[in-house]
Image (tube, rainbow, N blue to C red):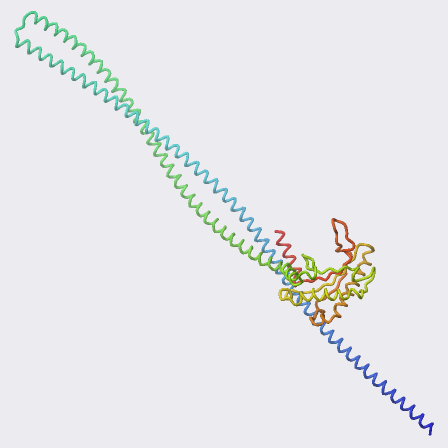
Length: 444
């Protein structure tokens, strides 16, 4: 009876053992199925992300090609504008030279006109002098005629006295003397008349000669005036023609200048738009500073959060200290929380980067490996936080080691304590393209 019981218990033991093993096998199969399904899901997610990344890279390449084309067109426009400026400057110089030549010709013509006017005035003055001389001669003739009339009157008076009066001898003698005196005076007057006539003849001959010379000079001056007036009309025509050309050139120049100004305004507006795009980083950093306030100190230019390695890790170690995890968690949640919750920052956020940095002690590969391990350790800890899962930060985060490539220097000397650090920084969408555009704009 006792033997039967022992056999029953043994069989029950093996049955329960078989059931247990079957259950464990079932659980193991379920686990394997779950792992396989999860791996398939992860692979599909990875493929989807790779497809998205390829699409994003293609769009970035297309945008880069467009930016290259835009920069090429800008460079061509600049060269064209430079050539147009040179051409306009040359045209301006030619126009100024032509203007100067025209002004010089006008001055010469004015000087010639003045000379002609002066010569005309001299001729008029000479004519006036001749007229004055003629008047003087006429006055002298009148005086002589008046004297002759007086003598004739006296002669008539003497004849009448002789006829009518029976004069005495004394009176006759006196009259004879008077007659002699009158005759002498008459002779003198006749001589004077002869002299005056000779003078009149000489003055007439000189006047005739002067008239002939004046007539010739007047003819010559008239011919010169006609020639000069013809030249002046031709010059005026050429001046008018050149003025018309000048007006056309000035109008064309004004049109080109207005086009040039419009093009510059367009370029300035496009430049301002591109500058506003490239200034997104500064706006994001400013918004991040405003969000964090004085709680956490960040870099003024890049907006990165720096944590000293000696607080997080031991010397030469890549294992996080337990006492450092609380401070790291708090800093991360505040910093990343400001990035992913702020509406001014989140639309532009592309990546959250964990960078490990070392000092220059030791070899480069050793420091690179150590910085990479430390960056991975920080990222693994941060991804284990509930905050990271709630805000789905995992797709944003990447880790990289920089060794001592970005060592911090003070007055040209490496600050090794400051160089040993962990940096949590962010990268914006199309930041590389915006940086290149900013370089091109600053290069102008």
